[in-house]
Image (cartoon, rainbow, N blue to C red; front, side):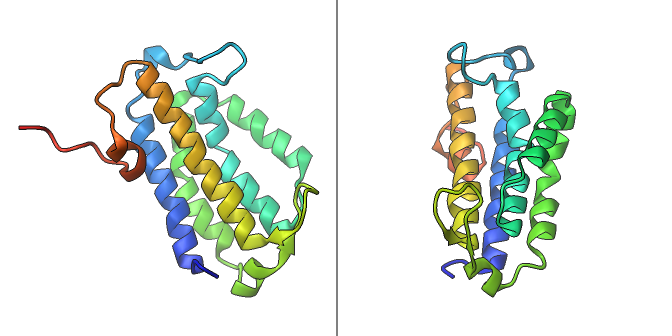
Length: 168
């Protein structure tokens, strides 16, 4: 493994931290912003992110995508208020640690094919689908924020989850 299990968990938890930082920059009046009619709104994107990562880790653990469980997670996320959505995202830090606690290095090297698109190791699936997916979707949120006028946001917000130092 390129990453240890502890490093993988820490990377997933860092995604949660950065996402919460960016979510804290959302103007509640712009929660319905969507770049085009068929794209998710800011709020819909957050709701999706409140369930996507842990649901995909569960798929990685079992080696199969459970469409019924996914649909139930989506429905639950869709019913959340903004504050409930942020709380669900915040809870992912502990969820990742708990979900991966009993996964061994051998388990991470084992082959899975959750979507029937080709085998990969469980660890590679978690990195390439979950971790990279989190980074991609938080980038989408960052771009939504920029499109809604948050011009002060910078690379530090997107990749570091911190505000740039004040110029002075």
